[in-house]
Length: 154
Image 1 (cartoon, rainbow, N blue to C red):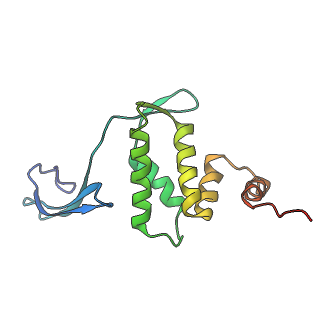
Image 2 (cartoon, helix red, strand yellow; image 1 turned 60 degrees about the vertical axis):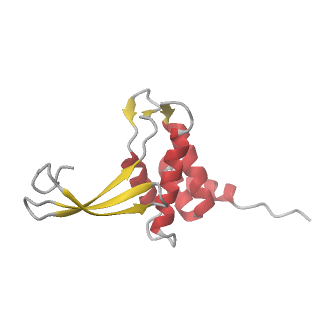
Image 3 (spheres, rainbow, N blue to C red; image 1 turned 180 degrees about the horizontal axis):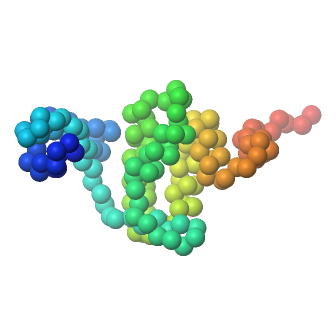
């Protein structure tokens, strides 16, 4: 593993332990050249996924991009970071196990929305506001009104 500080390729593993509910390995590393310490994560990758955008453009699936968007939606919410990590790993496993290497971005967005809806309603609405490209307060109002259960009529 190359040192992110000096570029030395001969780094040493000082500590390894399971992470993210045993789906990754967290490794603390040390660079003997510059003395830098850093952490890496090792995960199983079943297949290389390609995201097909709505414009038809194709790009490699980027777990960090997915993680960043979910963490932004869940910012300052009372959900444990470990729970968010588990959710992200679950989404990636679900995508990898679909059997397809080309996955439409719409499918990824729907899976994320479905997962967020079960975990945190505010995070769900935040993600939806970007995913569904809300333009005005009315868009929020309409979306939230669909979430509320209707009261039985008397």
